[in-house]
Amino acid sequence: MSLFRGLLSAKRIIGLSVAATSKSTVSAPKGFLAVYVGERQKKRFIVPVSYLSQPSFQALLSKSEEEFGYDHPMGGLTIPCPEDTFINVTSMLQ
Image 1 (cartoon, rainbow, N blue to C red):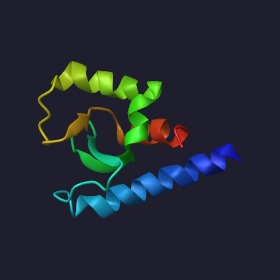
Image 2: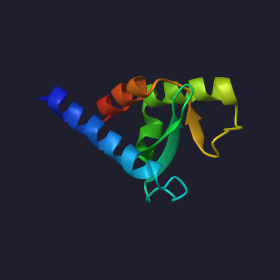
Image 3: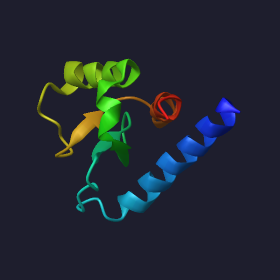
């Protein structure tokens, strides 16, 4: 059952990403933040602010800090990892 919930969560995150790509200048809804994910081509994802306190998400943020410091080229938080890794991590946080 938890695998099913994880897949639904990943689908929801992907849906938010697809919906957000055409409106990348629109800010995230209250309680959420936009992050840009990818190694070469960046994709915008909308995630709950509550993820910031999760150790697995913090590990992604550490990777981002190592690569970019506080200068993010996309104008928002950029996480330099493969999209599938990001989706796997965030689907476990649901």
